[in-house]
Image 1 (cartoon, rainbow, N blue to C red):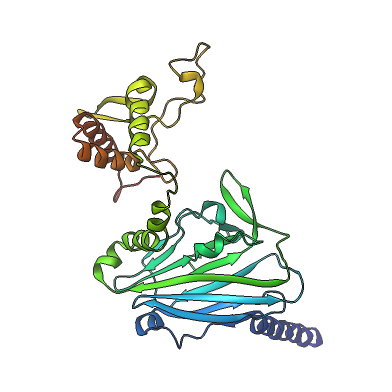
Image 2 (image 1 turned 120 degrees about the vertical axis):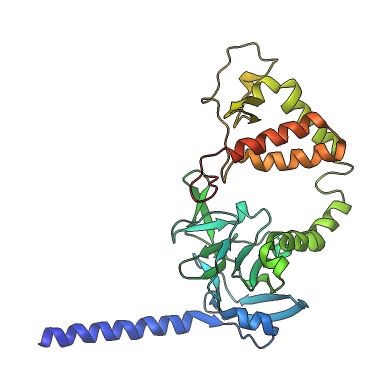
Length: 337
């Protein structure tokens, strides 16, 4: 009996300790400055101390659908902390979740290396929530990289700071050793919430528009990534794929009575028409249509270019790739994996 009492006491003490740690290390962001729709869409936003600093919070409305949240930490001395994170818990149960990378376990993160156009999206039939890191701060080259994560079973969208390492091809994990120098450390992000049916059905257009209006348009006007028209690069690429390297790149054949085709998954230098040595294809010739490499995604751009330039040959190639994708084995819908 004494053993049981002690055992229960240990459990109770451990429980109190766990609750205490949570209370000390997670800070709630007040929702008083959120607009009504955003207030209803979010259950809780909480973040970690950075070292012993709780930081200061600044919330700015951007428009009727968008707010910007900035956290600032004044560090009196250098701080080593392997992981810092902010968790956003929607108040609704999403039926659609999207993140720009995969995080199959709790160890994994969407490292800054693969941000590209970073956003986390969650929606039901009525509303959509979007979380977008402020890339202006990222571009200031802070001491520790940023990351994102999405835990669908726990309905949590996460942004954070941590060192990272690549494992299993391009899957990333947290890496110990993150260190913050004394001074001011800032972290900021945008939250967008919409109940418009068009945006709920297609949130990607809104995210892309936000990036274009806030960053892309200005960068392009300054000549980034390249001054002048991109048209010569497009022409060169399509000439390479469908003319000078056509026999190596373009694969065309009959499938179930339909003419289909697509670019091959990969080619290498030994397949160049100018290479004098022995051709050594790295692997057997294949066409891929899945999350990593999608011929259909390439065909979409090819079709738009062909339509704009009235190029019937390239248009037909794009349509053949579409027909190939539609010929995939299906069970209860399409699978691109």
